[in-house]
Image (cartoon, rainbow, N blue to C red; front, side, top):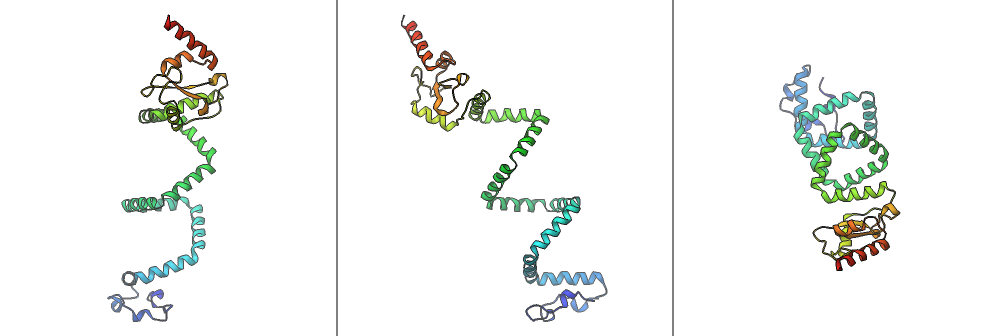
Length: 252
């Protein structure tokens, strides 16, 4: 028997027999499965646009049911779906990757927002997973750290300084932009001696964190190496006296 889906009357009232038919339709042996399959392939090629539109309409009308059935089948046989997906990916890898890149470029904002939302919802889980991975791969972590320090020296300098203050119980943090603003405010001069520090400077806490000082930008100053060594963790008052003594010795 011929395919019932092909012989039935269309929704617009016309019969498939009045449309263009595959060339082999009149010579098809309907008892031969191979000939019927070939007829159906030719029919689909001739009516691809109409069939695609009909499938789209049907999918939209049954989308929720299809997705529910798909999720149910996947839960019952997860490995079957994975193996099929791997086979499809392996057979058409380049096209799939190209489509993925195209879609990602067109939906970059939505992707970033979704990733951010996921990280917020699974913050603790991700932190534990990251901690476990770092413990299992110390050599890889070390290599990544070395490469990152070489590529982003300022970023690591800031991280190290903030970490130092944090482990000592100091409140606050600062960024590279805060240091640039501080350098502009000091006119690229050392806060202790007034020397030019554009080539080299140190970041100092006005009140040392070891003596209860905060790590906020308001408690920072930029010093030359000599002044930072002289000050150490002294309070502003003690350092003022110390500088006066040093200057008096220089005059003598």
